[in-house]
Image (cartoon, rainbow, N blue to C red; front, side, top):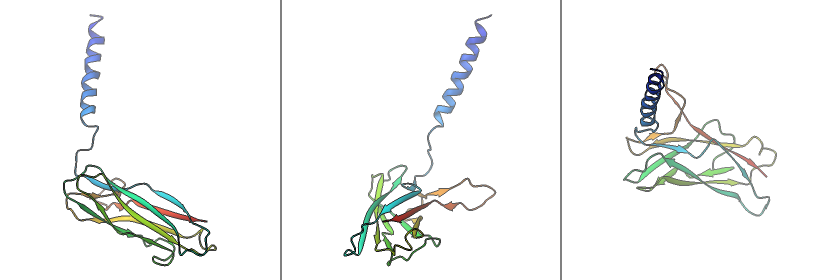
Length: 158
């Protein structure tokens, strides 16, 4: 009898571990996400160049798909600075069929040194061109609230 309890407890924990192991991985529709939350870009001090830094960043997809995917990025309205004057960003990102990543460029121009500490570029995934792909969102969905898009902030310095 004294061996029966440890055997039953061991069997119980083993069966619980099997149930948890089966559910460890996300098995829903693929989702795309930005590579992180924040990036600091150091600009060149060379005053003869219009473009001070060209940075290549990535978007990942949780599960590669069998058709090429186009992800559209959008500049958030809370960004400080002007698109085309202070910085530029590639807004259409292609992820090849069977690939896990797509790449886009962020270009910083000659930003006024007095304004550089305030200047930032905030991006989010606006849409994808396939209905079964979920754009990167943040937070838990509660009480039928809309989820906010996951943002990526680029800060600049000399």
